[in-house]
Amino acid sequence: MNVKSLLKELLLPLAVLLLLTLLFRNTDLDMQITRHFYHSGEGWIYAEQWFWMLLYKRGMIPGFLLGLVALLCLCLAWKLPKLRRQWRSYLLLVLLLLIGPGLLVNSLFKDNWGRTRPKHVIEFGGHLPFIKIWDRGERGVNKSFPSGHASIGFYTIAPFFVLRRRRKRLARLFLFGGTVYGLLMGCGRIAQGAHFPSDVVWAWGMVYLSGLLLCYLLKPEEPTEAHLRPPALT
Image (cartoon, rainbow, N blue to C red):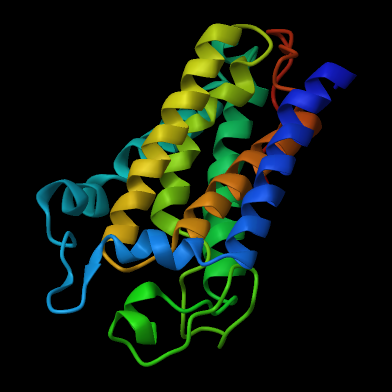
């Protein structure tokens, strides 16, 4: 990774994540944004709207389909030379789904960090105190940080990591489109009282940084000779 790529792909996103985190921690922004979705007399007034319910129930399908297609292509790479050349790309897509939304977001953090969901916070009719981003709460009980639904939406940026050197315009389109889709998923969960905006921001951060790390390790931009088989998945 050259200096220009390092600045654009790693340091700039990290700086944005850091600045947003400082903003959320040192202001009332999380609560201010979330208040727009809550009415003291009616509760979460947008929670049952059809669009947010559609995203909640069906919004994860595109991400899972992308991962499933990548897994199928990875398996077929053993037999088909055309697919074999790009086995690193397929492996990256599969591993990013498992590591980003799977291991990091849902297993390590969501199940263990203990941040209170908005609907359980005292200010929104609940009985628990508000917890700022990156402060820990009671493990296994509160699962606000980060947003699982948003993370699987953000996973649709995954093709960016395998195309960013070969087809830059298409790669940027996936990065932009996947980010917008994940934000919509996250907005739906905020509207339903399940997550704060900062939970959504860090869902993106964990998926993006995981993808960048896998790029560094797997180097998907380097095609494999057709006569060479990918290593066995054992």
